[in-house]
Length: 539
Image (spheres, rainbow, N blue to C red):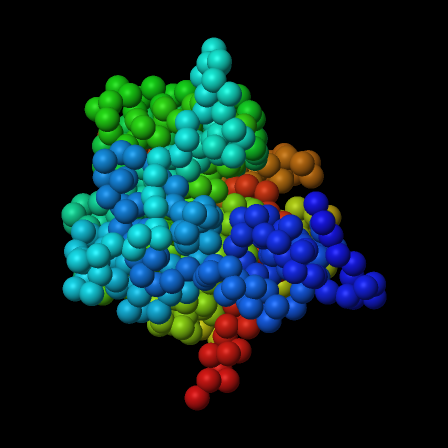
């Protein structure tokens, strides 16, 4: 393979160098990617203008054109309706699904409308008569069977770990968009309450069960987890738009505590789904693929699944069917995914900037999301014993809350009380920690009530701390109060055959369910601060 020297050598790429590297260059997509790889791997140097001139000479267009994107989404949706997974090619080159989704989010409103029309099967007048011949969508090549004697080129082979996430994404893409388009799911057009609280409620109780276990209430924690397993059947029969995302997160949360718990949930949920729903139902199709890789492949699957959810929100976030409540919920979910490493910062930035610029997220909502990002930053710092940083940022949140109406942002006020309790506990200041624990219990009972799961978990945390420091009398009194309230909670759950309280927001839970990187959370904080500054500077 020919290679040229660098700038300080004999000069730039020659005509022979271009000819030798043509096949490799044309398999890449972005010009930035091409230039970096060619310089680092092949000592091949050329300017942007030189590359563009060469592409023109070769008859190659690197950008995705609007009509090509519309045609890909049209074919992809039609194939998904027939149960076919899809890989897309433009002028013979395979399109990375991530790149396609980024195009969608950055597309102008007119192009976005054309894409939505194409997915619904409506042809535009200008494109209905002739399809884009440069666009080809086909089924991915299957992996060879173990006993097959046929040799398949690595370029055509789709390994299971790559095929499964892609197929899951295609199945969900069709199911989610179909549910919205048919009116099965609504985006709370009337009023300000979200209509996707089923998944939030279920996910919240799963996380709460793990909190109880961590605080020493093992029997009650597993009792609550059993209730969550039982309620999964109801979620299957009436799934809302965040159901499958909550399913994946549940598996990952349980596995982060104990691998056997994660495996047990996958086994239980997949078998229950096969009993409750018809064989051809999308959820059975999904589970049949998830079990191929099990818990080890969940993170790869999760990435594909969450990309599908991004696609869903991209279609609906700026439509008339949505409102601020739903949009802020969606943005919060994206923040969670990025902080846990399941969503790239580039995609988070694209979505958040588009939502703020389009008015889907108001300035007030962006300020609130900034505080929620700071809350997560404090939790990440606490996990690494960076107590000074944690306390400083907590005081910033409290200062912001002091400027708001007294009865506003009650969930955030409660969670900030949790932060102060945990900071004082870890600093070893017993008197201050007990005082912060008392404040936490007081605000939890005022906001949620004495038998709410939020209050019960707060009680378990303070009781556990009292036992640690030897405050036996206080711990025993707290235990008696907890157990009497827990009986009320369980009796109500048994009579309702459901969770006693419904959770209609994704930000109720006050701890990190999965590991988060301080740097990722800090990036999120910086993003919202930049967006708010731009909003302040705009005329």
